[in-house]
Structure formats: structure tokens, C-alpha cells
Length: 314
Image (cartoon, rainbow, N blue to C red; front, side, top):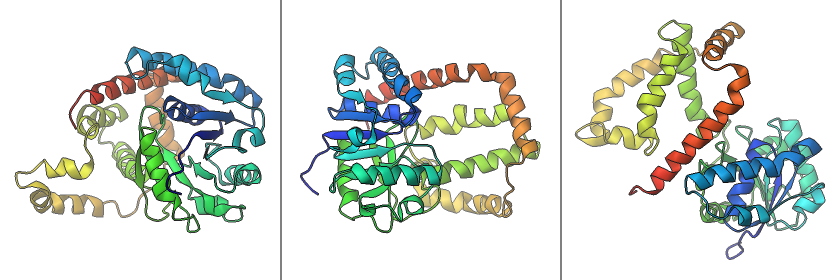
């Protein structure tokens, strides 16, 4: 597959993630065709994209709104969307049966040499592509929402994914400005949600056991751990947190972390009562009717952070 570049992209599933993916590809020059089975969702795509692009201009993240918009077109049928696409980004509802049906329809109309990446957050491709025609052309390409601002994307092949696809899509995602990572074999939740899940599991447990409020637990991340994690990962963090580097840190604090992990040998599910307690606290800080506005605030903060990082040395 070397030498073949991605010029035409189809987005299947045009909600928040799908719309953001369209920006990723169009801002890098690809022609993007967007389809959603729901006509009401299709009708709102261009407005959502234009709103995001206008915000990005304020942070000098983009300078040609009209050019990006001109490369995105919403279409009414799956055939029109995927028929000529080099690459298809599937972003339908996160449920195996929905994804299976979408992948069957994609396979019906896609080119034999096209590639399909699923935005699945944690369901491995083998769960919903096993009986799909052309299944060797399918894999996971899982972003963090919103992908036009958070660049990491997990590439996870199914057991039957053509091995030539992984390096090809890795290079393609880098050319589109993303930060691909390879998950060598399938695992539920992939990398990102397993890492996030470990933190969430401890946060729920600490709240349940009465050690802190949800707000103070969030502050530990937003005003503490998250500041370092905005520009370095977990291993680099500990490598820099002891005079002798990672080995020194592990020798000093490894027993503590082992003891902490051993104390959580029986993780508990998020009970209805626990969810209600944390939700009640969250709604006192952020009423439900203000959630959308806060999401827009989050995106603008991400834009400011991305703009700042671009000006800093690596």
C-alpha cells in the first residue's frame, strides 16, 4: 500500500466525533464526504463544523475557513459517501450491533482497496467485523473527542486485518496532523480507556469511601497531575521525579504503588447510589442545561492549549 495517499475520505456517522473527524481530514486537504442515517444529524453537520472552525481562527489554529468548508460535503446515501473513498472513518453509535450493520453496508459499497477505521472507544473490531465482507480492510482508529483538537488516535488491528494497512494508516494519520499509536493486539478498552479507567476506578472508590468530594478529586487532576500530563506521559513523569530517573523512582515508590494496587483486588461496579451521589454533586456545580455550553468552553480551552503547545519546543 506504500505510495498510495488518502485523498478522498468518507465519514459515516456525523455526530460530534464524526463532525470533528471531517475537520481533521479537510483541513489537511482531503475531499470529505459525510453521511449519517439520521437526516436531522446530517442537517446540522456544516453548522457544527463552521462553529468549530470560527473558534479555531481566534486561536490561530486555522486560517482558511472557506477552504476547509469547501472540501466537506454532506451526502444522503452510504453509496455516495464511501463509493470512491480511499479511507472511511466509521463513527456510528457505540454499540456492537449498530457498528456491525454499518460495516456491512460500508462493505457493500466501498472499493476493494479502501480502508475502514472505526472510532470505537473500546469494542474490538473482531466483535463487529467477523462476518463482514472485505473484513481484512477493517480496523480500529479510535480518537479522543474532539479529534480535531486532541490528536492521539489508537490503531488496533483485528486478527484478520491486512498487516500492510497498519503502517500505511499510521503514516496517513501523521500526515493529517494526528498522533497515532499502535495497539499490537486487541484488548477491550484499548490503551487510552484502560488508562483512564484505572484513574476513574480509584476516583469512584475514594469518593465512595468518603475520602474527598468529587470536586476535590477533580482538582487533584486539573490542578495537579493533569498539568504535567498535558505535555508528558506517565513514564516520563516518573523518570523526571527522582534524582536517578525512572529506576530510582521505582525503587523508592514501587512498594507503595504495589501496596495501593493490592488494596483494590475486588473492584466494585459503579452502583446506582454512587452514580446518583456524584451526579447530584456535579449538577450543583453544573446544571444539566449548561452542559453544552461547558463543552464549548472545554473545546476553547483545548484550542488555547494546542495553540500554546505549538509555540513551545518539543
